[in-house]
Length: 187
Image 1 (cartoon, rainbow, N blue to C red):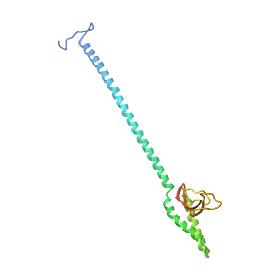
Image 2: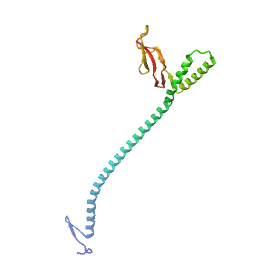
Image 3: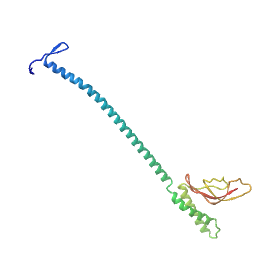
């Protein structure tokens, strides 16, 4: 049979010509291909959804890491700013001790004493502006976090573990101990 001839085909008792047969074949082929395409699409969609979820998860992790780094760097910057004077203040404390010793000495030259007092006051004021303050230890309970006991002595009328004498002042820088006080404690 040639293509030009009409071909009669019997499908379930119906007669068809060649054109109709071709249309049916195409329809059958398309219907056979569609389920395959439809089964591929959900697999492809599932894969894309999984990849999207994976990428979102990675994005959120990187974003969280970045936020944590940002917070940590801000905290470090604040700490650095807050305690920037610490090393300088530690170096100046012996100078303050010497000025206090000079002020405690008797002298006939009042101008010298006045000059040392002014220097001491200005230095203390500058340190106080930066958060450095002397600790008040005398007649307070001994605290090993703030005091360094170098002597113990029995003192009548004073409770045990009370600071009875301060040999060297202790200093705080804001909420940190800059230098512990050297003290004598009652037994």
